[in-house]
Amino acid sequence: MADNLKYTEPVSGAQVATDQLPTGEHVQIMKIMDATADGVNRLVVTSAGAARVDGSAVTQPISAASLPLPAGASQDATLTGGNAKSIVRGGAKGTTTAAEVTSTNVDANTQALDVAVKGTPSADVTDRAARKVGQVFLRNPGDTANLGDTANPLKVDGSGITQPVSGTVTANAGTGTFATDPSDRAARKIGQVFLRNPGDTANLGDTANPLKVDGSAVTQPVAGNVAHAATDSGNPVKTGGKASGNTTIPSTVTAGQRVDGWYDQNGAAIVRGGFRASYTANYRVATRPYALSFAFTANTVKQFATIHHTSGSTKTVRIREVRLQLKTTGAATLMFEIRRLSATTVPTGGTTINAVGHNGASAAAEAVCLGLPTTAGSESNSAQGWGTREMGYGATGANPTTNPPPAPTEIVLWRDFGVSEVEPLILRAGSAEGYAVMIDSTAAITVTAIISITFTEE
Image 1 (cartoon, rainbow, N blue to C red):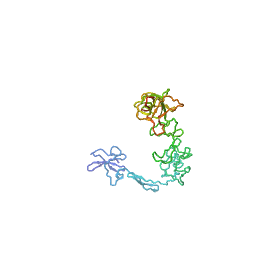
Image 2 (image 1 turned 180 degrees about the vertical axis):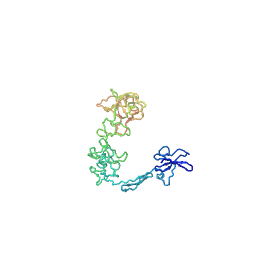
Image 3 (image 1 turned 60 degrees about the vertical axis):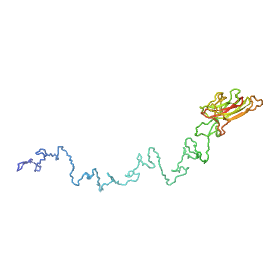
Image 4 (image 1 turned 30 degrees about the horizontal axis):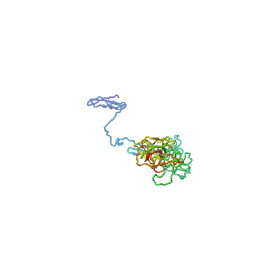
């Protein structure tokens, strides 16, 4: 039947449109319109039966400030409290109904699943196929053996050798005991350490194999066990020193330095300076007659011989001996004396005397020696001196006629060869000073004399 079966409303006379269904019935057509009176906009239904609410032809989003859900309906607040959560439920597996999955609380925000390992883990370290969770083995690079046993030790670096261990190690002898016999090297265990020689043929430290502490291969120096000024104890230690030739003098050191013992080549200790550079100055002229000669005025004094050095000197002079021989031309009382010279006036003029070294290799003497200086040196103290002698002389000018003639008189004014505790007469290094041999005569006579002064320099 055709659509739009007309039906006339009896009162108003209006007609209603219909639509005939496939079954033959008629249904009234309803117009869904917008709010505009007598509008023409209609609700459109797609061929798939979807009613569109706008012109997009797609599913539309729905938003709302709040949903009027019924009581007990699921909401985010009841499920997660604001955070998404996941719940794992148990289920059936095969013919066995599994229990629900359980978890263990880790912290306020974490639940750890409880996992049960089924089966029995293998305890056989060689059965790798049967091993389950519970054992970890370190294997060599070729996966042919476990690391850590005797045949395959675990290396902690690339050296490929047994590694050193530091710290305290506790050793157990097992069923035996540690050997304490130092001669039994094969039986020794941990607890003893022996130092061996390079060829591993003997222990070091015994009489035949002394322990050397450096490469000298000689016995090392040993210090005494008793300090200076402490009470003596123990056995004495044999001492030695450095042998020196008769003409070799040890080098000078400064105060407080250590020195070697000094011995001669026969082993006798030298305890005094017997081998310092030595000189003798013979005060005479170069031609005959050799003696120094001076004509005195009565009651006068003359410096017959002087020895001095300047403030620029570097050597210390020690006068060891002063002796003289003389004769006169008349009777007089003569006084002989050694006096110290000061720096005020340096003696000059007269005859320069060259002091002769006792050793042919000795350097020239630094001291200056003058015979009968024309300008006398200033005396430190004319009232005092050393080796003072006074003697009365008669006329000795003529040569003796007896045969053999009497020996000449030799007067020794000073002699000190370092065998006593008395200091010699000294000229200090760096000081302008000296000594003079004085002769005083009571009469106007001529005195001829030869004077010798022996001294050392260092």
